[in-house]
Image 1: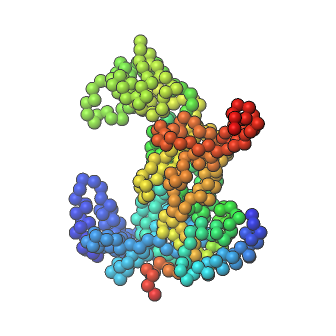
Image 2: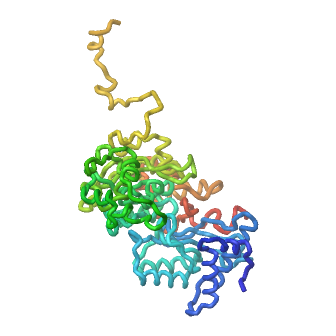
Length: 442
Length: 85
């Protein structure tokens, strides 16, 4: 018999999708039985009370959580998010129900024994409820008390070689795609770069110094599986400078509908009858810049006009490959719609080398110039994207020392006025009046 | 770095004095608020001093989860109240 009646939550289980309510009930039952004999450091009925307070919130149409507070581990200004309920008498199990963010490994690769260790720790010192993974990319451990925080941190760092992630006005845990570890489209080693950035900027990750949150996300190619372009203040998207590599024989195999060359690598096979592959309709006709043509059994790509949309490569992966001269593009300023609406990243650096041999110095220089500007000029709780909107993209170029280039232009200018700075004008503001008077009378 | 920020004791004293002066109206502050105490210094250097004060137990963090603020340890509203006495 459940501790609290939850008719509204029960209804959520009736749909076709897996339900978190079912998962929570499963966990509540598991804790009640405690077949493994765990010495729970959180009340045994914490999950029952979580379901109870959620039901109450549905009933009242308002939240019963208070978030924030003075919780954390020694020396760290992030990684723990304080959470308390305002109905502790009715739901004592969730009186304090803090979240811990744990820095996920690059590419989210785990060994099973690590996951078991993590779950054992969380069953012992927390609610046992996790979120793999949160929107930030972190491993989210949901629900523990203030007293347990240091103990958990000690075990994570000493026994599991594991750090907390970022929260608050910090650099948030950098997040990446699988990159070259699994994906042939990856233009750089995202795992290596995310590991480097995480280590290089430990201080920024753990000790709050920013006006607000700041996120790095890394995508190995323009397919943007991590959606870094929409979700991070600084997005690193793999790209290439030279030409798409074409295997003309393989192109013709696709055209001939050779079964060993299924379109989209067979990804949509079987879902419905798509009919025979049609190069014109499915690739050339869908190219956003119309830079491709197929003549006399030969595919031509006008690479100067290619926008690296990846569509042709995705459709014919055995025939087309990314170029050989690879690196990444840096985009800035994406954010969720809290102020001024949602924003995608704006292209700042069309191509930058990703070079581990010099500690990615080209990339860190851009990062640090941006941080210096944002820390100085950003208002409290102002994201980088909002600062760019407020002070202008031109200012961003100025602080990063990057010259304007056509790729920066999103659309034709709408403002007819141009205000030059003195150093942008040959000769500056000073002029030789005598020289002027040679041609113009008083 | 300014002489004030360079001198750990003096810098910490200036921060505490400034926070005490503000204590009647406010108890939690953004990192940028501390820039006013050290107008000639770079944000990164100021952050180092302020974070050291947290480590030394003089200040404490308050975090909403998305934003972090600083205050004197034990000062102002703690999580258990909503502004009531």
